[in-house]
Image 1 (tube, rainbow, N blue to C red):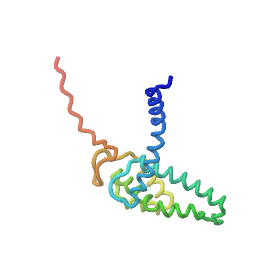
Image 2: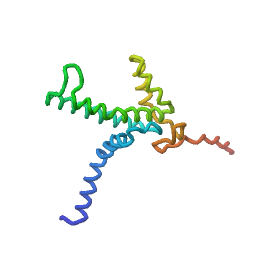
Image 3: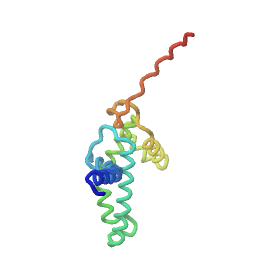
Image 4: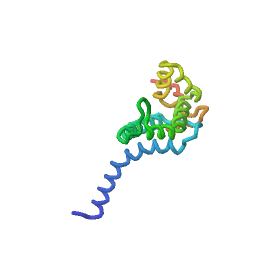
Length: 158
């Protein structure tokens, strides 16, 4: 039976299935909207979703460069190079905000200049969870505050 209720329920179910994909793409879009924002904090998910989408787009553009003949012998092709240039500031911004989320200065990004060890240390910083509550860079983007200190247990009187 096709009544309005059944149709609207199917529509809701369809919208629920589409929402996670839309939300994950919104992480990428939100970083692009804050392309030159170096203050504040960025959640772990925001950083890694931006990194994932950037990697996927870069791979697709590299394939297109190869198909269209835009790639050079040893480097990036034209399309991929333009994309990398376009996301340079947003990449720095989200990386610095991610470091702020773990209560580290954005200057820690320069540790990547130390071969191998710098990249490993930076990776460890990026995978760490947010510092709960506020820190010197702002409030927690997850909305999680620091856990209140546990109250001492009352003595049991028998």
